[in-house]
Length: 264
Length: 252
Image (tube, rainbow over all chains, first blue to last red):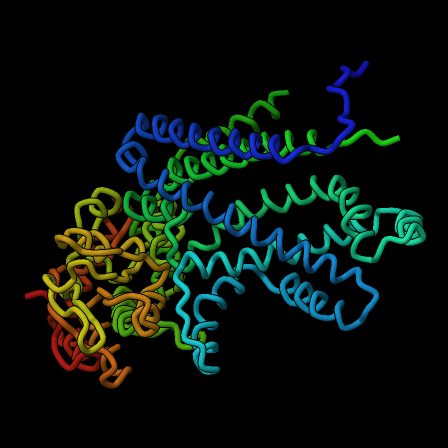
């Protein structure tokens, strides 16, 4: 026997409810950080006195994930739609991006953006200096964006062709069909794999430690190399990551439930 | 039944008894000593392609030769070296570890094999004294004594930690930080290599550099100290030091 879950909604989630969901998620994370700080401060020697360093690192990890996650989502939507286009010229850049990003390791991408991109840009006359945070954001959002694009493409392709054909025969333009018929349906399909990518992104952000961005992993490696006690330090780091992903999935599960609309 | 019980007991005891560091007698018997270093800290230990070279590498090879041992080198990231030593992945570490109280709690140090200091390196016009570091961005390697000593400078700005010294130097050259603090001899090397693009400033602190063995491995420590003393007496240390630095770097 399965418990009767909440009845699927008849209408999609309104803007106000979405805002409330965002607010609740933000509040939960603030609470989580208070909790982490309180718990870590109680710990014995290698952890307790350095609790603030871990919390600072965790905050940076979350910040990195949220900023790259949002940018990566935009990249994914644009590249994903481009990839379903019938025109070769529209498809090519998206395919190129996905081929390039998915075929190279994230660590190399991060090191490339940090160490190789500035001199390359300088040689073409662009004098931008990306600091550690934005270097990591560029690499991470491109990376997650490429994976998101494939997810979104799959979501769009999952909508039966007949839907688009019917919309077109009713006189809707290509853009309108995409906006009002295909995307709203595809959205429900792509939420779970997108959440998957977001959780992976949170963990992948640990690679930013290689460019001296003081996030959770680097905070841990600083403490571990200072105290020579890898066991408590790595355990703590792993637990904090687990706490972050747990709270995150708690809310994305909610989101998943809420975007679900009753189908026939 | 008994066999199974015995098996699980053995397995348990393997888990319970911490692995023992190899004593001098065991190393002598095996004929090979396992030494760990970083391999990214010129001119002390450096990987040139596959070839491990540098002052400390040559010195350790010499000490091993005096002790009648073959050498098996292991290279590890710097912040892993002492942790791996305590897990018996190698017999001793020679990787420019400055002696400080935290490290002395974790491992046993030999007599110092050279003396040096942490010096500031910056681009011309950059901060070259401790006072000038106020509010400036400084790059150091993670897990080093430079990190803690730079932190002690009053008013110092952002201190960034890189996995390798060479990464920290690259950050200085790219203008991502205002100064790099590292070993004074490494600094001299960098200034030479960059031909006037950077300058070396004040010494922030002095330190004594020593080899490390696992805590309590006194038999190995005794042999290492004896071999080092012999090398410093018979002139082979002086020759090596002259070759790398043009001066004798032993502690006075």
